[in-house]
Image (tube, rainbow, N blue to C red; front, side):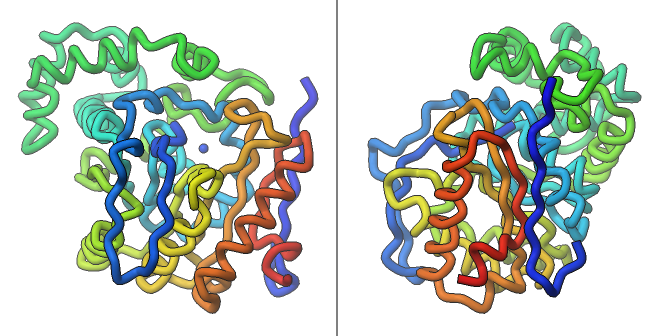
Length: 334
């Protein structure tokens, strides 16, 4: 199988993978001082984006490996866990406006915390009955204990994860299959079958460094509260991953430019703002990844950032091969 082209773009001053989880028609935010509220038509369809629809997150590796290993802040389900594992993040904050995605993240954290090994985690995740979850919950404390002991958690997992094999091109079927060669779904990015990736996530879970909260990125107050929480824990911002939100037809880039400005004021110069865009119009099939570092973001007004996203996505849409762009000079030098 032919591998996708990987192209990393950098400014001259530099040396050299869950999942769209906010299936929304984003509303333009008039100003950062205001809190925009989602209209009724923008309410999520619970759980629709829990299965990962980006099956080749390894394309983003050249970007992710540039992370400063700070907190991985991400929308989505598996997208967030994969990103935190690949960047060796010091912590993972899962944010999403879909409560079912947050429920997934909390249960998955509890399973990782309860597991004794990668093989044991696979057992708990894929086949363990409810009474085993209950028994393992007694080894945990706090929220993880309550989550794993709750029969509703097991029932939700059975329906949304174990029996959900048809969504997004059989994403969970592919995710539950060990990748063996380049080109396989989730190659080099699947923590279910990689000891190092699993171990990192397990460590984060066991040390209470995975957190999840319902959050609407259109709500400036919620975004600021998240940033304040992270800062109060003396954590640096590593990657802020908001999937393909800029691709929303209803003001997506405008909203992205607004919340990026909030994050930017709290973040470090080497914090990365990561996004995804469909290749050549092949929505939900092939994806490219692009990111801008905060040292470039913070020097510009929202309207400039919005224009950057428009240029980058137009460039991605014009090719039929996936790429990874980091601080693309074709964009930031315009």
